[in-house]
Image 1 (tube, rainbow, N blue to C red):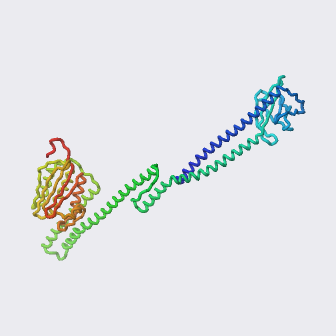
Image 2 (image 1 turned 60 degrees about the vertical axis):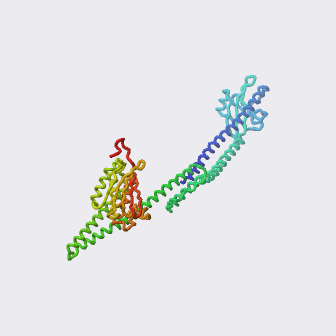
Image 3 (image 1 turned 30 degrees about the vertical axis):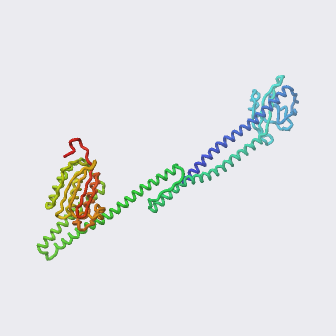
Length: 468
């Protein structure tokens, strides 16, 4: 059952119960009021008859004759209940008096009862009265109830017919009003179905009217659509990035694997190749294997970064960390010039292992992409509440059109500067820097060199412990 039908039925049921209660109360009230009116008229008529009899006592004929009385629908009885007089309009018909009524009247209490007289419903009022000589008699007056019964039946018909008609009209009007009230909700439902079918999360519900519950529902639904649209685009971008990542990683892994397979086939050749060529092939295999290992390690690092693994944020002294990084870099490239300016000693909030990896990537990038004569210099500076670590080289620099893309994964725009890398180092360094609450930027001029800057938040330490 729909909400519209439930609301209409509930509204109609409440109205029907209200009409039934009102009609019942009206019918009972009207019935009692008309009864009381007739009874009061009968009481007055009986009292007038008794007063007239007291002033002008009447001598009744002896039985079996019945004295003819003036008036309408009036009858007198003796104290023992025998009919002794009646009005002419009764003819030979006697107004009944039950045994309970006779006993009540004999005890001095008036009695009212209903009876059928000549197939007509009547109300009979019986009351005792005493004549001046002490004789007790009973007077009975009656009134027809046919008109009252007809009026009550007419009222009952009007209440039932009119109430039923009102309920039907109310049901129709309730159905229309419920449809009008639920129309905006139906519109929201249609919009939601269309959005689900079309997958068009940019669509919104257009709701006009007062700022009521339906309007608030539409606003909430639109806000939800905004969140869904953002999440949908994020998922789309993530899936697209994942597809590109898998494609690029497959391409990068294919080259060293193909080289290794070719070298293995050469080593398995029969007759065997000479010793000199074998040594060259083994050296090339070792280089490709090391390249493959580096590439796999870089892919694992990117996978951990994509998984959102939280990094530590602890105070890290910059001086000893840069000194250690330079020492390791000189061991890897003893023929290159690597210097650093240790004039500023600061403490940053970072992960020491991740920060060391970032700096080693930047130094390796400078060594790979610059000539052997180019120098690499590390320095630090303070900028407000942040510390900047600069890695500067004196190489050929980066063209302006390549700068916006150098942090993209697998991007190697300048073949002359590629140095055989996979294009993952700078993207790893950027993601690690941002995961520590920092940033990685670059400034470069062609033929003058490049400067990569790692910005990290400064750690707040007790006074006297800022320099280390």
